[in-house]
Length: 432
Image (cartoon, rainbow, N blue to C red; front, side):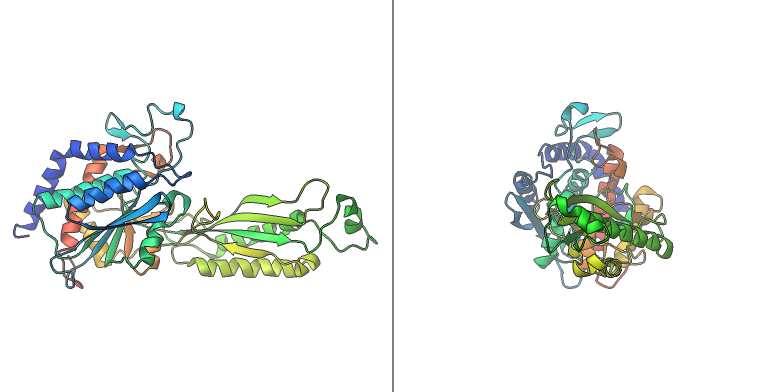
């Protein structure tokens, strides 16, 4: 980077503006792949396309199946002085939400169209817009002859919409960096997030009884110490509600409305049929927790509280609730985890991204918390300082006639290109 910083910014900005149509074509191409999840197992073709794109830019790519038909792609562009300069991960997921009744859409969800200042199509906001803009930002740097001293890594992952943790797979394979940006829907805010974990609470009776025995269980002198697992689950649900209220009173986190940490009894399954006393009941819960909490500690709190509830009931003491937490897929094992992510506004990576934003858009970025969850928590849990920063409003994610403002896509492309250039050409331990 021999030219001055201001001249570099102007050159990148001008190049992005001139290549607006290229961005739209690339996004249209990505939207054209119907990577809906569920049912999933349909991302191979788009991932091959992204892998070829990265290959053409000089990346060394790795592609492997997380599930059959759903591969991750990781590309690494080695820097000129990797040991001494900052490395960066740019991460995004290629799966998109269900579209519902296509007749409700103005046009096909998988064929983009432009109206006023917006581009429409499934995934333009969540989050193929972020992927397309990131790929173009990297291509523009190459075309302008801008070299990087630190490593740049691009992760195109699967499964985020159904908790299939493609990003977790990347961390388990050892992919890491000095900083990471998850380019998911954030309206160009720089964000951390709370966390989510699902769990199953199961009550299983040791005995099975005919429906005709019920009167002997519930009336004096009946002599049968039995119970309906469904009715006993009502006590568990009441206990969860008590804990939820306790959390609302005793816990808080800046950037979240009080009481955002919730325990939702989402699904209940129980009983055999009407001729039996229900001998099993399973409750599927969804738990939201704050960025400064770890899901393992949250699990302990819930289990401890429910064990106390069970200890106060003579039948539940002998038939205690059992717990199964999380999972790597809402499709395969009906469970998911999204770890929380605290954001450090003073981390050199966050500061560098903020400065790039301010230089390009002439205003300070909003730094705060996402009201939803993304894969960013897995990168943070792996010890990688991470932020969420991407185009698109959350209100558009999963919506009919999903759209994103073209101007915001261009602004994001500019900011990310300048940030990559700056961060990956800054020595480790220094600030820019």
